[in-house]
Amino acid sequence: MRNYEDPKYRFKMERVENLKAVILAAGEGKRLRPFTYSEPKVMIPVANRSIMDYVVRALVENRITDIVMVVGYRKERIMSYFGDGSDFGARISYVHQEKQLGNGHALYVAKEHIDGDFLVLPGDSLTDSRAISDLLSVGAGHGALVIEGTMPAKYGVAVLERNRISDIRDQHAEGATNIILTGAYKLPKSVMDTVEMFVDEGNHVLSQAIRAHLPKMQLQPVFCQGLWIDAVYPWDLLEVNHAALSHAPVKTAGKIEEGVLIQGKVSIGEGSIIRSGTTLHGPIAIGSGCDIGPNVSIFPSSSIGDNVTIEPFTFIRNSLIMSDCSIGPHSFISQSVLGYGVQIKSHLMASSADAYVNLEEEFFKVPNIGVLMGEDCTVGSGVTIEPGTIIGPRCRIASGARVSRNLPTGAIHS
Image (cartoon, rainbow, N blue to C red; front, side, top):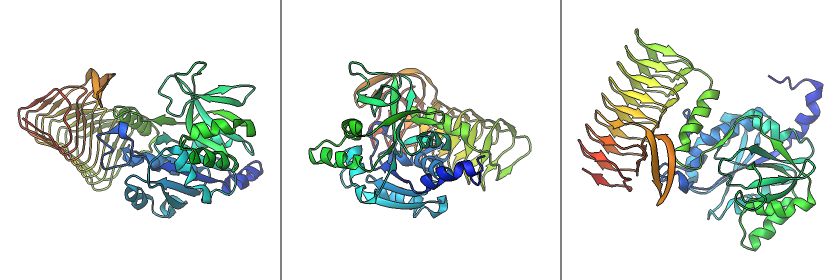
């Protein structure tokens, strides 16, 4: 824990406390369907907190409390969750991006709020206070938070020259590197002139505006030592959830009956009841108002939202179960994501295996994946769902059915 009263931090803190942070949170996240039809990507829960919740708390832990959120798609979800920021120790203001044209345009609509050096970062990447502290290590300078790897680089990759970023390129372009831009920057106010010029020309990509501004600033690469992980595709939510659980504090509330076995980090919310014979192997997060058991087994790394019922002899492994779901007895759920309000009668078989997943008619080979089911689906008894199947919101699956292909929104399958 840092002692901010220590003189060596005072000058840094004076600078930090005058910084504004702009969080870009207007997009839908179409590649994360079926979980973003009614919820913006930044509000998807992992370890029972929205992804952007982690971003805000990471900023506040670094004494950056003046936050501007650029909102658009389903903005009311974001605004009702964060309010004026007082519950988070922040001052949050909102700017509405009416059309989600791109992240460069999103920053542009916040221009009236920028009066000096500022941070800009995506609201849909899981992060922690260490990562933000890394970015702030540039001091009075300017920098881009980067990671090394081969994962998809939606913000491009950095080309380095004498400890500065000399170019930004597409990941698949000639001369590309493995130094991936996270989309988080500390930038000078002057970059907004270039952003505005690009927007006026119809170019709404922030990384391209920053690339054009590189000759006018020294942009340092800051290698992230903290947590930074992004969900690009729906199956990525399992990895993000695992990372969030690994960093989550343990809170034990509710009622735990005799005969419950708890191993590892397990959090249980207020008003939940864990019934006899249930086994919980952490890391696991269980929300408030849940009724689990008896004789249920939940294994790492699983998150169970609020007001979830899990009936006897059900097995859940490495899955994300959102709030208000009901899972009947004798069900088996592995490596899966269930959206809000899913109702399952009994004996569901949703096992996991390596599978080719069809996402918008593009096929991806995904290791060890179960089912990806949108919100408010109803599943009868004795249903089997093949690994890698995507089921849209509000589908109805009859008892005894076998599902081996994707189902669109509102489908009835028997």
